[in-house]
Image (cartoon, rainbow, N blue to C red):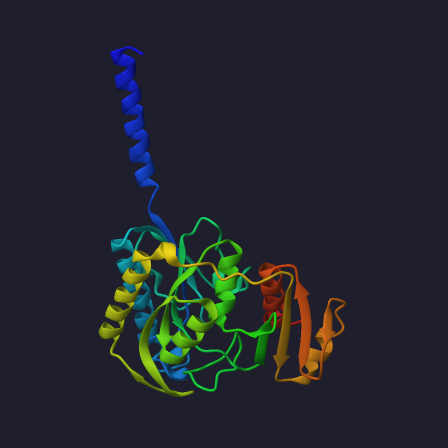
Amino acid sequence: MNIRNTLCAFLMLGLSAIAWGQDDGLKIYISADMEGVVGSVTDAQLGPGGFEYQRFREFMTAEVNAAIDAARAAGATEFVISDSHGNGQNLLIDKLPDDVTVIRSWPRELSMMAGIDDSFDGVIFIGYHASTANTRGVRAHTMSSANITSLRLNGIEMTEGSMAAAAAGHFGVPVIMISGDDVAVAENQVLIGNIEGAVVKWAKGFHSAETLTPEAAYEVIRTRTASAISRIDSFAPYVLATPIELELTLKNYTPVELLGYLPNVERVNSHTIRFVGKDIIEVSNFLTFVTSFRVDMQP
């Protein structure tokens, strides 16, 4: 190889290294709920009819931004944000960075984790809460506080966090951080693994908490996010063995009776059904149908 060809080869290697560096940033998925946001304790903060709802949309959005800022400073370059509370239209999208994308409203495949795939490096949960089986935790519920009293996968009582983690784990993506009240953080750490936890309030009851102020909460989220990114290679995906057995207990008789007519659903007792899915995607989509379908739905 002559000198000219050698120089050209080194130049191409250098350009390749630069291009590799440009593509080497982390891609992070953020799923944001609202019950676990700093200060939120009742319906007054959690839905359009609440007198504090607009203010708490701002707090929710700011918590997401705190996580984005910290993750970006630690090396993340790409973000997808899932609005995972209520009507799925809570985040103030004009207050988010211009280079993120946002998933909004329902129904959507994989529910709170719509859009997750194997291109992501990690998942962050913002504003999450404890499960319906938990005797503590602010606004503790799983998917529907009005209708669901138990949700088990493979015999394990699930939180919304562990279900979302299982969806990410299906694609080999780990959860790295969760924010919420102390009960929610602890419960999800037991189920999912040694993920970072940002406690922004301490549960005193279903509708009460001792809470940080918003700015203090944002700082905790930034700190725990930075710590999570710094050790992102230490986290393992949360993976459920397949096929996955779902046992779902509902408050009312009639939907259980009707679901029992389906050939792939077993009615275990007056309030409980069993469904077996080949993977978490099939189970998640079944749950979306169960919790969303109405015969008078329009359009």
